[in-house]
Amino acid sequence: MDINFTAMSIAEMKLAAIDQINRLEDEKDIKEILEHLAKISGNETNTFDAGAFFQKSTEKYDDALQKLAQ
Image 1 (cartoon, rainbow, N blue to C red):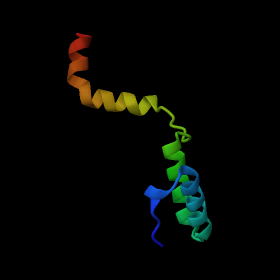
Image 2 (image 1 turned 180 degrees about the vertical axis):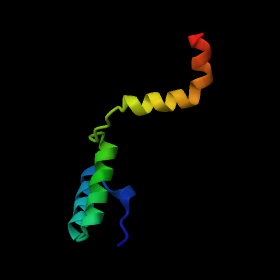
Image 3 (image 1 turned 60 degrees about the vertical axis):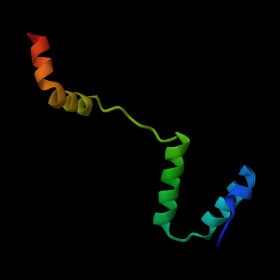
């Protein structure tokens, strides 16, 4: 199915997207689309892992941190 997206309004594109999603039957595909939509809409919650950040920082800047500590 060829769709000319450039000739569509935003509302028309949304309806076309919903129509395509309604045709899907594979749960994996639907989950992938939902994850992508959450990511691009900014609704995905990103938690900050301070421990991982500290570990990466110490590995990357270990020499500099040791010199600063002296």
